[in-house]
Structures are given as structure tokens and as C-alpha cells.
Length: 199
Image 1 (tube, helix red, strand yellow):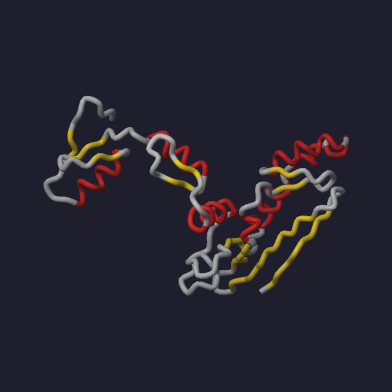
Image 2 (image 1 turned 180 degrees about the vertical axis):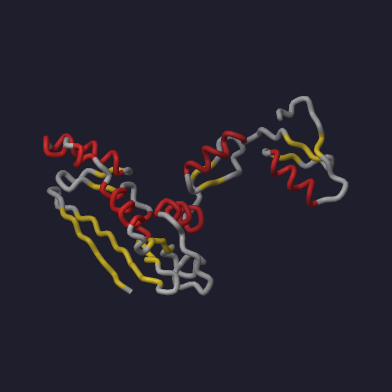
């Protein structure tokens, strides 16, 4: 197992520490990266090396760099180096990269007996927030459902209170596929046709 730590100091005398643990699984020929929990929950993932300003997306950082001078306005400076590096790695068919959850005992942690790696950094972040973080976002419509990922709340609010799919047993559903799954499980159950139901 290899552990790397990067320290970046900016002009404000503040430092950011990024801790990653990279292990190589020789059985499957992939690199498994495990980020620290504080890095997964960090507001920003990309930082300007000149002024230290943080950004959520690499594209926003590259656009910001244009303000630091003409050398950052060239097409080469604006190209996404991470994507081109990944493309080169795929062409050469080198080792792939998968991710591990930093929570001990989690099934997606590399020390677990039934470990299954997560395929991207976004997957790790969302998994960690959904599974290991408190649910801080509450639906204002039903005041019952809680979420730890804001996009999950937004998706829920689109359909909250909109019970339009009804079974003959009286159970209501937000989605048609959930109703059909319920009907398939129980003998004698059937969808109730209503004038408010849209196909």
C-alpha cells in the first residue's frame, strides 16, 4: 500500500492536505484509490495554484486561470489535462482506477471481505454522503423525508404529494414502475384506472 500526502501553501498562509491511499489489486489489474473523508466532504476539489481560490469543477478553474495572464488564455492551457491523460491511459490499456470508501467496515471499503470498488469519484462522494453522513435536508412538502444529498431532495420534491398510481388494494405509488412491481408480486392485485392518471 502506498500513501501519499500533498501540501499546498498559498499566500494566505493556509494549507490544504489531501490524503490518498493507493493500492494495486493484482488480481484485477486496477489501482484502488481511497480518499480521506474530509477530502470527500470538501466544498471545493480544484484550487488555483496562484491565488488559492477553490472551485467545484475543473472547467471553472481553467476559466478562472485566464484572469491571471495571457499565458493561461492559450488553447493548450484551457484544455482539460485530466481528460486527455485518462484518454491516453485508455488507449494504452494501462491500469484502471477504482475507488474505496474510507469508512471502516463498509462493504465498499477495500478491507471488507466482499469489497466492491466504486467506479468514480462522484460515486464515492455520493455513497459516503448518503450512507455515512447525517441527513440534513428535509422535504418542505411532506416534512418527513430527509436526505444527505441535495440533488436527492430536489428529485423527491418533484414528485412529493403526487400519488397518481393506485393499486386495487388501495396502495398508492409515485411512479408507474413501482406500481407494476407491486402488482407483479401479489396475486389478484391490479392497477386502478383513474381519470387523473397520465400515461
